[in-house]
Structure formats: C-alpha cells, structure tokens
Length: 549
Image: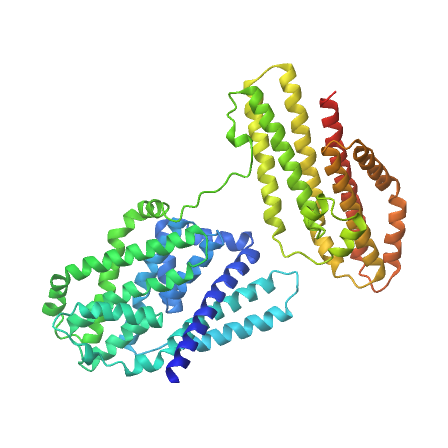
C-alpha cells in the first residue's frame, strides 16, 4: 500500500511541476512589460553576463533545476534567446556547486517546501487583493507559478524520501567506481535534485561507506541526471525550449564522459596533494573543478552549440496563403490570377472570423441551413477559440498579398496591369479594415455576452444580428447574387441612417444605474465599428463590380 502511495505522490508532484511551468510561462507573457524585458535582456546581453546570471541565480536559489526551469520559462515566453539560455545553464552548473560547499562546510539544507508555501500563499493573497486589470496580479501569479514548481519538485522528492533515507550504498559496492556514475544518474533523475544526490554521497563519504573515487564518479553521474528536469520542463513547449534542454544534455553529457574517461588522472592531484583534507570537502572541490573545466572548454563554442541545436525540432510551417506562394511573379498573367484568388481566400477568412466572433459556426451560416433568426437563437454559447491566432493568420495573408503585389508592380509597368493591381490592393485594404473592426469589438462582445441588464442584452442581440446580416449579404453577393449586393447596400445605409435609433438604446443603457458608465462608451464605439465593417465590405464589392465592367 505504501508503494502505491509513493507513486501517487510522485505523479501528483510531476503534475504540479508541469502545471507550474505552464502557469509561470503564461504569467510571464502577460506581465512582461518593457522594464522586465529590459532587465532580462541586460542580464543576458552577452555570453559572460548570461554565465554570471546563471551562476548567481543558482547560488541564490540553491537549485540548478529551478534556475534551469526559470530559463526555460523565459525562453518559452520568448524573452530570452537560445544562446543566452545556454550561457545561463553553463553558469548554473557552476552555481550548483555552492550547495555542495554549504553542505560540506556547515551542513545547511534548504527547506524548499516552506519556500513553495510562502510563494503560493503570498502570490495567492496578493492576486486576490490586486487590481484585476493591473500587472501586479500577474506578478503575484508568477510567484504562484514558482511556488507550484517548487512544490512539485518537493512532491517528487518527498515521495521517494523513504527510498533516499534507506538507500544503503554499501549494497551496491563494485570493483569499479564507474558503477556509481549510473547510481548517481538514477538517483538524481528520480529525486530531481543533483544537490540532494551529492548530499547523499557526501554523507556516505563522511561515514566511509564509499571511496573517494566512487563518490567522484557518483557526482559526475548526478550532473547527467539533472538534465532530466530540463527535459520535463521543456515538454509541450516551443522549439527553443526543447533545444535548450538538448543543449543542456549535450553539455552535461559530454563533460561527464570526458571526466569519466580521464578520472584516474584527474583524481591524482586530489589524492596526492589533498590527502589531509576532509573527504567531504575534497568532493566539493572536485565537483567545482570539473564543472568549471567543462564551462571553460565549452564557453567559446556557445554560438556553435546554439546553431547546432537549432537543427532539432524543426517544424515545417505551412504558408498562410493558398495561391500566391505557388505561382512565381515572373509570369504576370498567372500571378495576377493567383492574386485574385488569394484576395477571395482572404475574404473567406474574414467572413469566418466575423462569424466566429459572434459565436456562429461558419458552415451552418454560409451553408444556408438556417435563417438569420434561427442561427442567432440556436447558437448562443461562447466558443472557446484563440481569436488572436485567427486574426494573426489574417494579418499574415494580408502581408503576403502586399509583398507579392509590390514585386509584381516593380516588374510590370503596364498601365492596365498597374490598374488591376491597384484594385486588388484596395480590396486587400478594405478586408484588413473589416477584420480590424471585428477584432476591436472582441473584448466588448465578450463583456456584453455576460451582461445582466435587459438594455445590454438587447444591444448585444442587435449587434450580432447586424454583423450576421452583413456577412451573409457579402458572401451571397460574392457568389454572384445581385439581390444580395443590393441588400448589403441597404444594410450599410440603414446602419448609417439608424444611428439615431441605436443612440436611443445607448441612452437607455446610460439611464440604468445598474449598468457601468463605461458600457455607454463601449456601445458607441461598437456602433462605429459595425458601420466601418459594413462600409468596408460594401466597398470591396463596388471595386469588384467596377473591375468587371
């Protein structure tokens, strides 16, 4: 039964650890203002600064694992580049020897569980009391993230506390000390702390359970085992996080292999000139020695290592465009046709984006399966979507269209050709304006969705109705329905003319004391945006109609 409990605690600790990593990264992304970015960038501006940052941070936190995880979080938040991250990790390998010296000289051991409780407690209380829209809530959230990481690490270590306490190294004595490298690797991988592993071997040395040579091999193995933490921290992250973990593994593994292969020669001065020094202190000195030598050997090659690991985890990114990337600009007529189709593709994306923002599934709306009223009634639940990513894709398509058009314009000076390009570019501009109008309503629509007052609910329904009508009319007009073109023109004029009617609704909202005063401004702003949206789509159709004459 106790064995099952240990495994449950281990997996629970792992879950806390991974969630803490993701939560911390999310909070860093939100809270990272210019000042914080500047601090991180200044601290890691050069290889040497990165090295010192890793060394000092590890000495402060007493854990290379924690510093490695913080580094991975900053890389994941795109606030630290790959080369700087590798420099920090090099420094952390030296910094982790501080704990070994503390244990050797004064026997101090840090209570990481208490630290995690303090950080989660302060972060949680601060987050509750902080202003909802202020950055302090995110700063306190970062504290909670750190606390969860510490608590997860402590949970994994605590679950194997019985194992580490009852682990008798004398049972594993072997003629060759190299077996102890594997033991050190395994223990560190399990308890997620090279400092704790080294403390175990220091205790064994102090009681003369193992030889100095065996302890030295154990320490080298523990250095390899600490890379498991980085591997876990990089799971599910961006490519650079995984590359940082690979660099960490390459550095620690290569250093360890060189040390193990030359171990008898490396230990000669320790045995010859330091015989009178306590073994616990000697192992701390050896731990520091081989980490410093490893950094000295690798330090000049940080850029090359960073360049090499960039070859890992390369994901082929599909181009956002559907047509223009397949047609070379050297064939003007085909290029113009591809550009026309790309504009149509962009229009499809803008339609889909607008419908998703008002929580209407595009296939059902554009497939003419339901009437407008039925669509609004049937689909009234918020979609759990990343609207920012959808909008970013639209922006990428817009940018590629501009780039492609610029190249075509430079290569073809014909007045007729330039005129055709100009019409397509104007359509692109109006589509960009239409998408931006919808994006600017995102937050407002989300707030109106949770509105309680009848006035706000009425305004929200009216907003959805107008956007849906505009998109449907635009889509049908693009398919050649002349009545739809007339309908879209009517909708635009009606929105422009009915501004007074909408203002009546807004005035009703302003009179209701239960409605926040800022909602009035939001409503006025949204009416402007709906008008801009309908005008942009109408202008696109007018341009297309002119080009067909």
